[in-house]
Length: 506
Image (cartoon, rainbow, N blue to C red; front, side, top):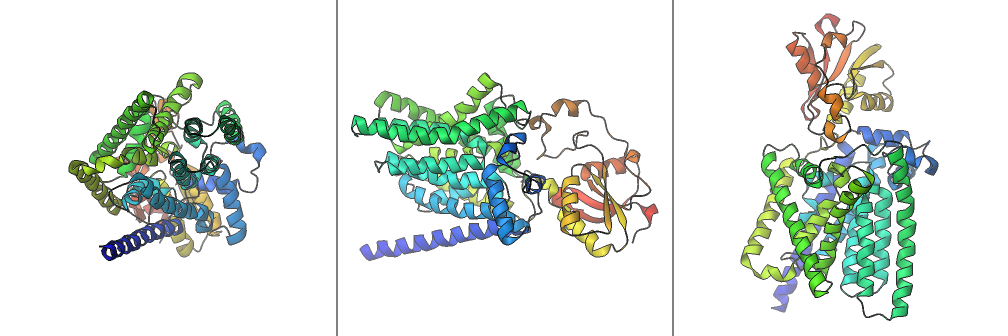
């Protein structure tokens, strides 16, 4: 029996290693192939001029990500992959601690946490992009692991390490404030419920509070300055349910043909986790027994309560889409950790079904062409690579404003000196209909309500040789009877490189 158990253990380890390697390769290849997005370009353009003094001028500044981007660009050059490397490596950290956390939660299978925490296409996007979201998730998981270690009776150093990783996560993405503050509360609660001497508890509390103050106070100051500068415009003002949970569910569905089913499945799982967590917190208040279940439940409940309180007190917006990505691992860990419940066959079946559904969803949505939040930017690199390789004379390219930043970036990156760009249209002036550009989350809802369809003749000029347009403008041209020839279409970004027949470009 011992030999059999050892053999099964080796097989499980090999399977986990293979699956982890597969996920890592997927993320790394996407980092290599994906076209640079508007937010990545904005960060890249500020690498030289960025300083701590300017951190409060733009919410696009993800502090730790900017420093690591600059470091990698100096070390490996300015390629997309080099600039995204910090997030790719953060995914390695994420994978390692996903496996480690599995041991703490007594899940039915050794690979359960690995699948539950990674088979979310929207979450995986951010490990392939040069933004702070992937970094924050990569640091958040070891923070959670050491929290569980501390709650399980390990030494005080585990609490310190958990808080230090949370600090790194917060420096990567300021929205992790909604994770860090509840974490400090749980660490202090665990400390004061321990059997340590009073004097030791006081000293340990001082250490935790000093680290917490150093981590949280500067970020809070920066956030208030960003709010004063009108930079915290990305978010919703309806409710946590509609904005935070609803937007995450839509992103999780990831443009799939079964997106309605995926959306409501996510919402169901989220609410189930939240209800279970609330009940667990109430049980703790009654019994005064702190467990890993209680700790994870506290994190989710308090993490959800934080933006509600901020909205009521400071009139801030509810976190949406990528700004709410931290809730994905919290929901998974809060829901799938009732160790003793796995003895019930029905619970095991539900667990296995969700594992299977997540795997199927991952395989049906995996791609090397686009990310969810910036899908509209996925064709720009291909369009300008084509123009660079085929156009030899000086030509003018008309580009709508939704693509102008990425078009300008690739014009310079590809050194296409024979091309000149002309910006056309208004970024928020028209109802583009992009799922990933929900105007309600960009503070532009009113502008879109009063917008009127554009007359395409106002955007077409004789001196322009080619146009790179979003599908919205192409549809308008068809409706107005304006003929054009598609040179190359990029369906994932719903854009196309076109020319008008009278220009005679071949």
